Image 1 (cartoon, each protein chain N blue to C red):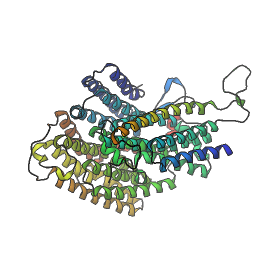
Image 2 (cartoon, each protein chain N blue to C red):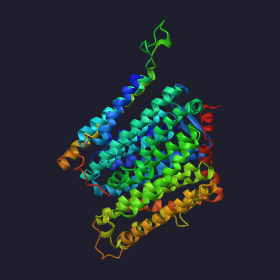
Image 3 (spheres, rainbow over the protein chains, first blue to last red):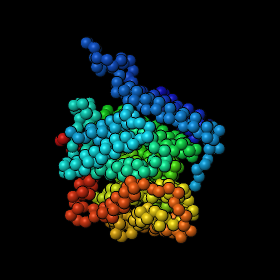
Image 4 (cartoon, rainbow over the protein chains, first blue to last red):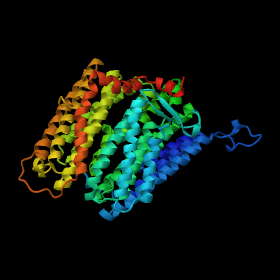
Amino acid sequence: MTLYLLCYALFLVGLYGLITKRDIVKIILASGIMGYAVNLMIVLFGYKRQAIYPILEKGKPVASMVDPLPQALVLTSIVIELGTTALLVALAVRLFRKYRTYDITKIRRLRG
Amino acid sequence: MILPSFMVIPLAAAFLITLLARRDGIGAALISLVATAATLGLSVYALVGFGGSTVVYSMGGWKIPIGIPLVADSFTVFMLMMVNLIALASLAYSWGYLRWLGSDWKYYALFMTLLTGMNGVLITGDLFNLFVFMEIALLAGFALVAYGGQAHEFEASFKYAVMGGLSSSLILIAIAVVYSSTSTLTLAKIAEAYPALGPGLKIWVGVLLLAGFSLKAAVMPFHAWLPDAHSSAPAPISAMLSGVLIKTLGVYVLIRLFYNVFGAPTIFLQVFLVLGALSILLGVFLAVGQWDLKRLLAYHSISQIGYILIGMGLGTTLGMAGAIFHAFNHALFKSLLFFNAGAVEMGLGTRDLRKMGNITRLMPMTAHSSMVASLSISGIPPFNGFFSKLIIIIAAIQARQPVFGFLAVIGSLLTLASFMKVQRYGFRSEKPAEAAERKIGWSMNLAMAVLAVLCVLMSLLVVPGIKEGILDPVVSAVMNKTGYAELVLGR
């Protein structure tokens, strides 16, 4: 239970950063932290106390293994996050070239 | 089987374009046109050939609890036809439009990736697979919004990407909770296990999914990214995003999850109604004050999504028919309006309604087709928008929710007012004539003409004989609720 609460706290840290920070780089980091919290939670869902790694061998009972599916899901979601973060960083670089600032409050050409 | 080809053909086209195309992009345009025509042909074949039955394909031969099934029922096939139709029109339009914007093969490769993502979301029968395809479509969408390379486009794309990341996190948490409580990710198996869950868990999962996918659909409290992203993107991409992306990633998934998987729980239908009414009114209020044509259209997208949500929230067969019909109509006329806006921007070099003039003479096709689309979106009788709005309003009254019917009528009147403004100041203004800066291409005129004709023709979908053939199987597939699971699992 403590682990889940810590996960939730990590998610809230990310969300707080995403909402309150003004620096684009910090916003990107915050969205990364939020992603880590979610990934951690998915792995936790597949965790069993005192379980072993999920590789089938002769004479190893399946019941004592952790669930391998969440690990596969997390790998996929990490790759997706990598793509999103790379795109965000690329956008941040281009934004800096255009506006000469990383401050999101000064990047406001779109209104209304 | 043809089900995997809806993903394979556009994805293969995207890779072929990056391998083969030269810098000018003509080959890339041809490859993507052929690929999209093929998927459109396949979806029409599926609409006719499957005859309303549910077709299931197991990827790699793995059976359902283990593998990922692809599922095509009549709702999926109908949406596939809509997406590929708009995609083909947008590509034809891009042929002329990109001459001005700077033609490049990267645009077509990204476009094909976007199409892959949307087709994948529609056809998959697995929750996590749906998430992956959604991310494919979104990543391509972020890049395409910033395609023009101007400062405000990067700004809009950044906003869109951050909001998209937030909603994806919410959806991923929901997927994790669903997996941990039902031990499966196949939609049909989730539908079987769902009634046994505790009431608290049901609310949790529902709220997370509702918030996540409402962000994608830009329903009112979650709409902040849409006006920026949809007005900054190149015109054919605005048409794709506003016309079909918010419907596949937002509305389609919401209907599929909340009707076919969760069996339409009343509490969430109420939430749909309230969010829908909010979107209709606030969206249209914000739209009336706009002078930037594309921004005005973007706000109208929020408002029109509200109509679809009200139809969904009523929970009756007629309401759902209205919602699905309106989704299709909105794809047609909103894409057409964005094409018009793009043509004006290209021809006169402005998006400000006050600076436009003499469009009727310089660009007759743009002016006339914009009239058709404006009348459609405001709900004037012979056009398709009238019939779908009428169905939704009648359904609201029949379902004893006259308040929401009344709000829908008010929204429709305000829509009419704002499009009278668009016509009066923009397309039919009597400003002194100057020559157009650029001639708009024949392919752009063709795309606009085809969509304008379809806007009129689609009102035939309510004619009794045709309604039973096309619209009714779609609605019954949705209103069958968790019968979807039995059809997929073959019980």
